[in-house]
Amino acid sequence: MLRFLARRLAQSVLVILGVTLVTFLISFAVPADPARMIAGRSASAAEVASVRHQLGLDRPLPVQYLRYLGHLVRGDLGRSYVQRIDVSTVVESRLPATLELMAGAIFFELLLGLPAGAFSAARRGTRADKGTMVLSFIGVSAPQFVVGLLLLYVFGYLLDLFPLGGYGGLANLFLPALTLGIAGGGWYARQSRSSMVDALRQDYVRTARAKGAGEWRVVLLHAGRNAVLPVIAMIGLDIGNFMQGVVVVEAVYGWPGIGQLAWQAIQQLDIPVIMGVTIVAAVAIVLGNLLADIITGALDPRIRVR
Amino acid sequence: MRSAWSRIRRDKAALFGLAVIAVVTFAALFAPFVAPFNPDQQFANGLTLQGAPRPPDGVYWFGTDLLGRDLLSRLIWGARASMIIGLAANLAAVVIGTTLGATAGFLGGWIGTVIMRFTDLMMAFPALLLAIALAAILHPSLWIVALVIALVNWVQIARVIYTETRALAAREFVEAVRALGAGRWRILARHVLPHLLPTILVWGTLGISSTVLIEATLSFLGVGVQPPTPSWGGIIFQSQSYFMVAPWLVVFPGLAIIFLALSFNLVGDALRDALDPTQRGIT
Image (cartoon, rainbow over all chains, first blue to last red; front, side):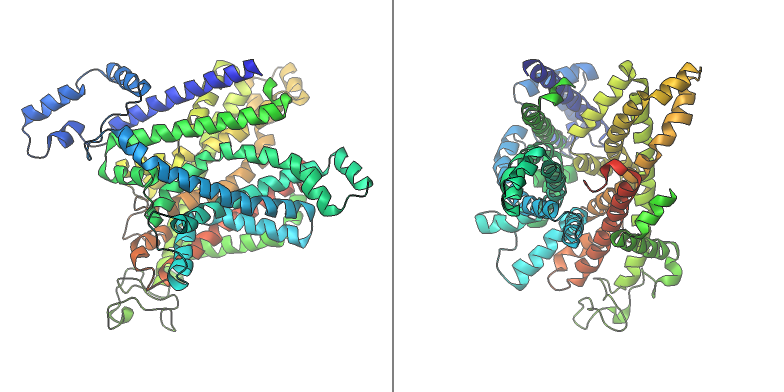
């Protein structure tokens, strides 16, 4: 297990290094001159040149990249061109809102997905199974901005049950979290169904049935306990999808998280912020994958051999 | 293949998906003849006396938009953007993903390692963020959007093809043709690739669904297909602030996106059941 851990950890570090390199290179493709943005529109050519020198933008690319890496290691993500404050400060101030949204989304994902999957697996091959799976496909196929706007219209505007966006209490969290949870729930329903179908084929399930356990007792207690862990481990793999979802959902609901931050930064071509959010998101994705691997590795020793 | 088709024919959900795909394809191909009005024309009676968009009625079946244009006609023309990008971007992603995945899986060694570590790296990027950033930098046109989506969307199929190719490369029949003296590329093209076709077909179909969704999302964020070209995501982007007074401007294009994405998912899923007997009934 230790060797498996060490190898996966080294791989993760390499991937994150690669991400910083790609982000760094993309930032040079942006058709905006950072020195000009900081010096201001009315600055003379000499002033722009001096800002460029101050930022180290006149150095060779490899030197700039190493300097950038050095800053990153110390947790310094650079300074926002537009807001003139440290990117790490901006990201830190936005992170709690996104984490809150994420917790709410995972809650709804599991609440909708796990029971639907278990139900489908228990009724495997019937019309109810087929119907549930089509429903889960609708959840996966519905763009989050459409679901978000429709929920806002029905529950926010027509029924006036929830606020029309904004950040604050649980009432504000409900609809954005549900929007993310519907897409994720469709996915979890499919995953937990296949996990459950596998579990229901095992010998211990036959034993439980033979001992006269009721159908729902078998499904929930005997198979469910074993089917649910691999599905929970998938939350780690899900971080990537989630990072995409927050950009859209935070835009629809005016939720002040890092998705909204990234979206605003892209429109203003605020390169350090875009790079910062991308790297934070990538680290979260890599850590999530690592965690998922560790959990599945701990559950199933055969996987470690890979 | 024939037995696959007979299996799909019994699958009502897949037939529904095929029907929707056929209707949307027809609308996209024959938009000038199918659309009741010119999609760009701003009708004088297209707005109410207060200047608001008209709700659905006998003249404008799906209502009108903020500029008094016929929504149904714009949706029919918008099918073109969805279908062109959905097919072109996904075809490109499938070609890139299959080439890289099959090469890595078949050759292995350091080339395989480099390719697969690169896909790991791409997996770590939030694909949508990358697409938004690229689209914002490159000033999107229809084909640029397709290219951007292809550049972020090949990763998953590359991984699937890689795993499949590795399993195939270890099989006896590959060993046999190698012993007969066939060259590497001949084995790959003539003996391995044909076995990959069902997988490519399944993932290619499922991929169109996610491509349609990414296109709609990019257009909704304003970095997708640009006006005046109508696109379903773009229609929602332009009218979202009037959503409360004119909900049809979000509901109809939203349903169009959902139906199209759902249909490709249903057909892809049915193909998987039909072509891959080991998966039948599990997923």
